[in-house]
Amino acid sequence: MRCWIGSSTDDLVGTDPRPDGRRMSGWCPWWTEPSPDEWRAQQQLLVDGDRWVIDGNYGRTFDVRFAAADTVIVLAPSRLRCVVGAMRRVVANHGRAIQAPGCPERLDFRFVRWIWRYPVDSRTLLDNALSRYPGRLRVIELRSRREATELLDQL
Image 1: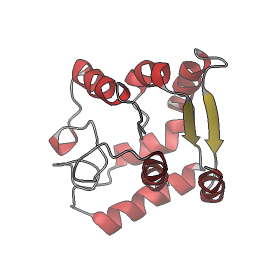
Image 2: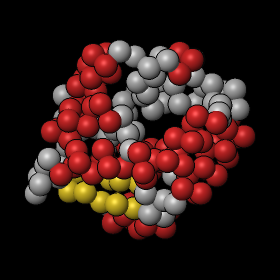
Image 3: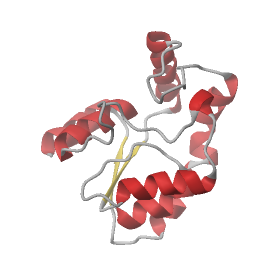
Image 4: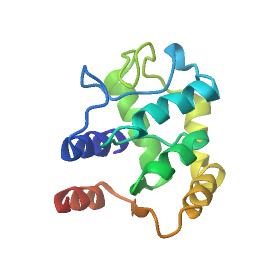
């Protein structure tokens, strides 16, 4: 659902963060995380533009993105739907670098655990970051593909 709504909002807003039409990812080859400074610089380059859609939950750059955003769409489907969706994506694209160059699709226990624990371990960080911008950000929370489709139909 995340990539689907990200691509759909790119189309509606008229943004294309990469000249080859693929969505940009901050990840370095083989799922290596760039340094915090590099990641922040990448995000800053994106938000310096007039129109942008950033798809992802990189907690270290919430402040960069939320300070420049007017709307945040939070995707909050059930844990089971998230794990099943990740598994489907891996089966459909196994070994292909869909999300970022040099980062083949894979599924490992750490990632499944991260997905499953997201509501407990990471959602609080998102909520705290959003609370720093009261009244400034429009926050839309979607729990299903149906809700996402309805939102896109309204835009």
